[in-house]
Picture 1 (cartoon, rainbow, N blue to C red):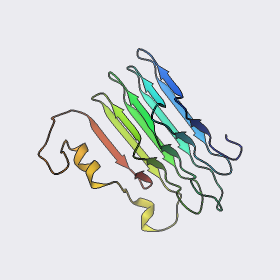
Picture 2: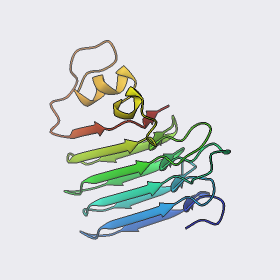
Picture 3: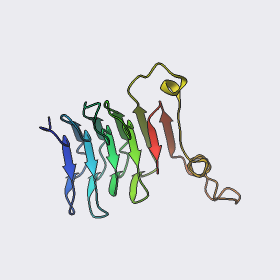
Length: 171
């Protein structure tokens, strides 16, 4: 558990990896404020050669802070090769702004070699309809279905992507 910041923070080319069919399981909880798990630059990776990858995070709990994100992929890549699947699951903490369950920013990537990719994000409960919302840009919906932006289908890939729960924010 992070003291007053992030639970697990990967930056500056940090790498967590498993070879062969080895699995990667990573979990973190933000302290008084901060992300549960955070990847920040393009060279940062969490990867397996063929095993499953699981990344789970719980954002910090401070109603006077922001960025209490469950799992933040602000840069870098989470990937599974071979027959490996990926599960990214995050629960946003309490805060005054930006407490997404999972946030995938423009420099962040989550990829799987032709297997299942599951992203589950939950916001802290507010008692509003947003507690059950799933918010993703329409371009990602097109991509999941093999459609290019404004184009016909480009591939017949077998990969499946599942986005569930409120709090999945793809920036």
